[in-house]
Length: 88
Image (cartoon, rainbow, N blue to C red; front, side, top):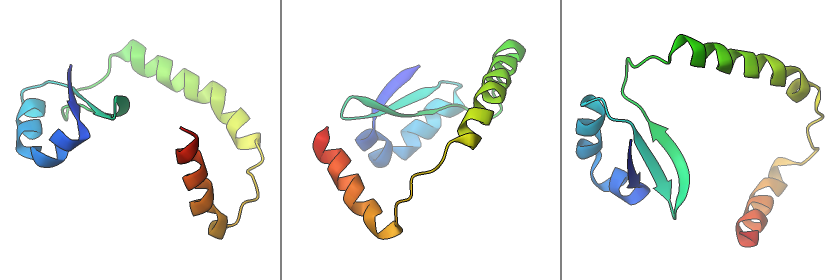
């Protein structure tokens, strides 16, 4: 697995495309923190990994669905986003 920066992904998309076509997974970071993982198309997870993922989703989903969402208006969301960035 190769690690690249977000800047590299945006400036060299053909290089990233070449790497993924070769079958290599790519981790994209932004200021050192994981942003996403790019995997080649057609690459399937193993049966055990897929079963484990489905089991975890099945266990977590009832708890997530029962949680009450916070009552925040859409107008307040940008302000909350700025506050959370400043706290980092």
